[in-house]
Image (tube, rainbow, N blue to C red; front, side):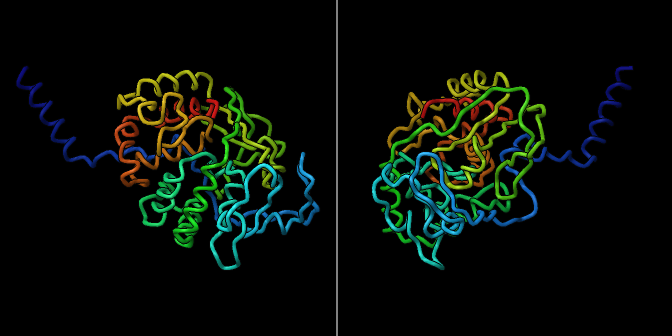
Length: 323
């Protein structure tokens, strides 16, 4: 009987060896909310106007708001004079920084907050876009592709000027995190974020993070005073806090590089109060090798040990922190 069992076990092993290997799970399945896709589309045009935003005395036309080479500056008294690479480009040249990151550096739905980041860090990241070290796991990824083009079109002096400008801007709270079981119904926007479905009601959060504008109309007018609301799964903030503190499977606490308050240290960027979708993409891009180079090499161990569910918890916690 023992020989029969042994023979059966050996036969099972042989059959398993001959069977085609089970394909690995497709990376990013649990992070579809962070990598929305769909048929390519153009950025929506703004209605002719005139347009205003709360608290600003300025009135702009739709064409002025959509100008990628002279983007809106609704509150010019809230920041120092900006260099041309940030605010005033030229036809045929790269999109200026403020077209996506706004004049106060706080960013857009798919574009990160640059305010207060170390100038040297900004310079290195733009150079990484330029030399191919920084891409996206998602192909194509419109905002990443646009950033690569901008990085290739900006000169080094212009880059240093822009980096110094954004580094000197104060960081302000721009996101609001809410733990929820139900969330507004959204649909993926092929430009890289989630759109609210008008009249769509609510649906279960189902382990996702849903990040939408507090006021969609103001966001698409590039109003820097209108931020994001981030719905995260119940319990994710507490789970994320534990992972950030322990370092998870990699055993490397985030504070060891990003500072005790996670607001940055030296040339290492801040994590607190950032867009959860942006943070999730960065962790996954590093984990999958889409974002590389010496500056992110220290992240290889911590990201390797993070599952997609871990990433959701970590970014929910980080987004909830005061910037």
